[in-house]
Length: 282
Image (tube, rainbow, N blue to C red):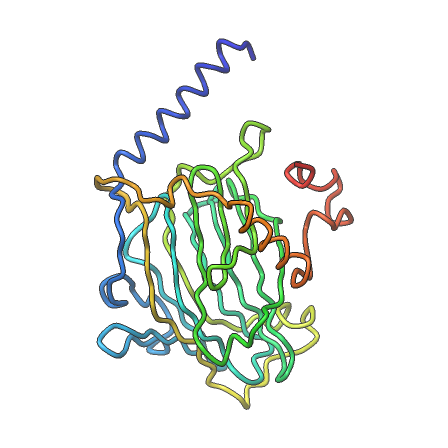
């Protein structure tokens, strides 16, 4: 491609993103669950309580449950407080993620993989761009996520996707489009969450199955906050729009990754016939 053609194509791409953002309303929302979310499946196993301040999802042998946001977001900082399934949670998965729709969807994932009593949860993260995932990083947590509520955050702006736990950054997926690596930027995404049975893979590679004698299982949600651009509408983005990790927060993230990361796709070349993805060497 000639430099002139490349420049024209780049200007068109920037213009399309600006057009989408100009059609997005950027504001802080911390409304009640009944105003911000719809429980979409589970036949009564998902419940909104306490005047909309608390949402619970249930799982039994018949079905799990789930909810989704009424709005779609294009960039933003999303916070949610979760308290996970206590006790023997083996086989269960609590998923909390942003996603668009279709075969070339974008997605930003938190998934909490249960375990037998006394063994730690696995926090599973992933990023999909244009329908392509396989960017898993997994962590242990430095606390018991079943004892109390903890805040899990996604910061998504044009340069970064930053995963945070209680405001501690654990992962930063950077925009490297200039190096030919796709980045979620023009597909608005809804927020979804579900509690479901995944005992074919979730706990110790599927070796440990769900013990239904402990059902029904329950996960709880509160403190939802979205400082985000809602499509469509009008408005101005907040500080998060240009936010990056300063040196101190980069050091904190490296500390988490050194001490609590248990899997990183970038260090698993066996999975990738053509070698690990390009961003791993950047």
